[in-house]
Image (cartoon, rainbow, N blue to C red):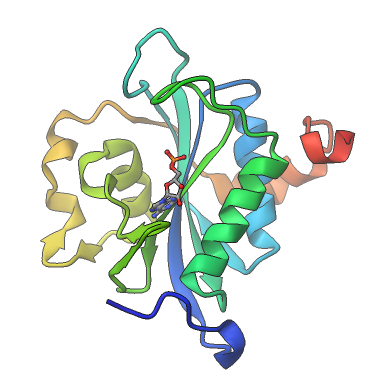
Length: 191
Ligand code: AMP
């Protein structure tokens, strides 16, 4: 277990993977907002965009999901603080447990670290069971292993329900149209 409170002053660059999900409101705009906010923290690469049925109650919209690779000098807890701030800035709404939400950001991997902290478990506890996380992660890291397990071998891929929305990496969309279009609704900017 690492000291997850270590300072970022050492300027060591860490490679992190962050799961993004939205199934409420303008889902694409929330993901776009999150990707832009993450790109202001460090260098990003972004998976393809996926659509997946909700976990838990089924009377809610499908999710849009993606995974972002972020290179950052932030410590794990400082990064979690940033993720939670981005969720709040996006006007995070969560109606019920396992229910619909505007924006959910999960820290999936932080280098090869294993972190057990009251606020943070890494690798993320749901990582290996969730095809909507594994598939976009494999876009970025086709040879990924978590512990001893190859991600491309995990059982949830046998019955995967998440589907890539297009073969275009979200990143290409960012470079073209996404960030040219400032019309999406941001709670922060409206405030
Ligand atoms: P949720 O909104 O359901 O994703 O859960 C958020 C809560 O999970 C927060 O209280 C976090 O402190 C905690 N948490 C634990 N591990 C993680 C992680 N790897 N990524 C994001 N949140 C985490």
